[in-house]
Amino acid sequence: MDKRSSQIILIGIFIGIFIGAISGWIFGEKMQAVAWLGVLFMNALKMVIIPLIISSMIVGITSLGDVRHIGGTGIKTILYYTLTTGISVLIGIIMVNLIQPGSGIGTAGAELLERVQSKENFSFLDVLMGLVPPNLFKAMVNMEILPLIFFSLLFGGVLTTLGKKAKIMITFFEVINDAIMKIVHLILWFAPIGIFGLVAGKLGSIGGGEAFQAELIKLGKYALTVIIGLSIHATVVLPLILYFFAKKNPLTYLYNMGSALTTAFSTASSSATLPLTMECVEQKNKISSKASSFVLPLGATINMDGTALYEAVAAMFIAQAYGIDLSAPEQAVVFLTATLAAIGAAGIPEAGLVMMVVVLQAVHLPLEGIGMLLTIDWFLDRCRTTVNVWGDSVGAAVIAQTKEIRDDEQVLDK
Ligand code: ASP
Image (cartoon, rainbow, N blue to C red; front, side):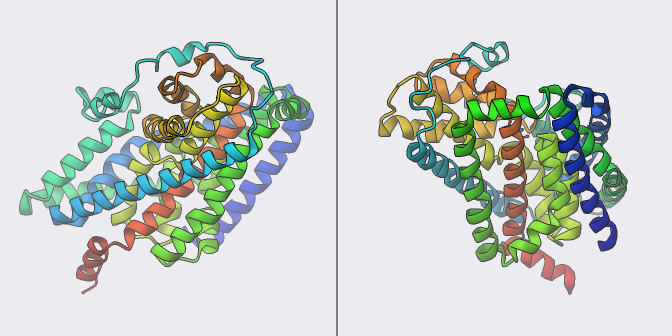
């Protein structure tokens, strides 16, 4: 997509957000009438996710060629995910200790949510077991992304060992990948209207601006703690990483990510945003697809800096509201389980809220506390999803600088 077109679309998206917010704020419930525009946009993005993940992962892996390169890149990617998620949780824990948003606010709204109960027996083994799909097509139908990634990596890896006869298969997936990216470009033209529908429809469904304001006031200090934490991570930590490890100008990089980040905010789903994240990273920021095809799909499901920070802040907020003091070792448990919960959370709206169970159970906090976060979660979800996607895109730039990928690029350039 040329520069001018993407500028027009980005301006359109901002106008869409603006008009959506104003009309949803003023007209409230009536604006639910335009929600279908947002659903249409979300569906269009979801439509391309499965073929995009399979084709881009297979193309990415086969283009890395040497299996040893795959291992090295994989380890560095996991290291990046772990490190940045850890920093993010730490920022959250520091902020919640400093601001103490839960102290003395009582436990109004605490109730055991039904959807929370499904996660009561969650363990890390579930993530591991979820990797291998007993039925590949069922995984596609249910949009389970991790098993698809696992299969595509395996398939791509094996293709590289088959020699000449695999060439036709690799070309086949390359063409699918190119065609899907073309479809993504078409969907992008609809983004301003879709995002308008999402924003106006959501504000409408909660009853307009006044209802939103009332929610904000009730849980304002808590929301502020999450937002300050997310802002520090997104505007200080990640840009520094981008500058020093990927040698990129953070402002330009951020600007080029515009349509993906605004979509992340509007859809509250890293997975639904994935097609646009890939478009912005590869085509606008010119990051090697060898890195992005691997880092981004995996990141959309397991690298969630924003969610991890939120898990830690929310758990400690609940403890403060119940008047329970968490000791330093208990806070260390919150640190670990918040990271785990973020890895386990799917890239869909409010997945993080449900995963709170993992953190609360680990430090014996009442699960009912999750009910207290409910009214404002739809908004914080959007903020944390934006940071999740930003973290993934910075990761792609960092991994593109690793020796394995750079060596490969040089071989190709010759
Ligand atoms: N909605 C988030 C995402 O898709 C996950 C969460 O609920 O924190 O990245």
